[in-house]
Length: 381
Image (tube, rainbow, N blue to C red; front, side):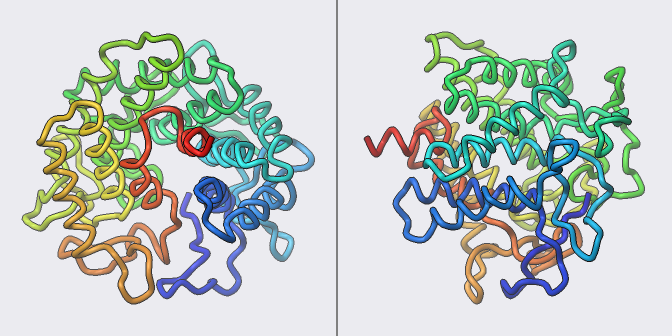
């Protein structure tokens, strides 16, 4: 699923592109959190996002959300209901509820009903991947990426609703993908599975630059899972004072494996996109989100352990971002760099949304738990 960029490299709207639901949800989350920090003009943008998610982006017939807005009688994408997308709708709704954005409560109720009814597999302890628009034709696939973002959303939803059920579901997902599969692979994270939980090592071998399900493994996801494990540990400790010890162990292992697998593997700095099953680089490009998640993980590990090595990595990654990735002409960060750290658009086109970079800059300022919107609301009390 290759999302159409709403903005070109100069930050201008791309003519003829339909509004994208994933990006709308992400930006709704970001602007709701920013409104909580008191940034002027952000609450109206979050309100527009909520209205869009309740209106033209929602399937009013079958429930759930389309990939984008209808344009000329057609919608973008393949018409399927995606777990990845619905995780971001739930995240956006939860953050908007904290800020009392109009319509946010209805959006969250709707999102959780769909999430619970269609995507959650109680038997497996994971989220199902996708369905046809009418919720038939479940995809014969289980994916780590959609479940990873569902972990983040589950923790936010648990904080906002006061229902630990969602936090415990996040733990079950982590047990499956990280404490079982990744731990047994020396913390390399397999991404693609069939319904019998066989790893699909050849999945998308013909699509190495796919933006959501690339061939091989993604070191940026290793480090992203790392900080999610720390946040889950902190959330569970905040709930009742107990958390599995393996959450910290796995977080440390994931970070170090991610850095080893992806950082400067071809001689130039930066965390590359993908490696194959022997650990050799496949796509050398440096997406901005990989750097942001590595930065977030280093900050979280420093906060949790106090170990100086994570401060060194935090500084190293920020130095790289400052030197290569910040767009000093148009603002924000560049979406992607090639192996020589020149601007590229092989995997991701256009200007990046704020989600990854914004959260990376917030992480050092907030505790590991609760989640961003709730933490900011507590600090303001």
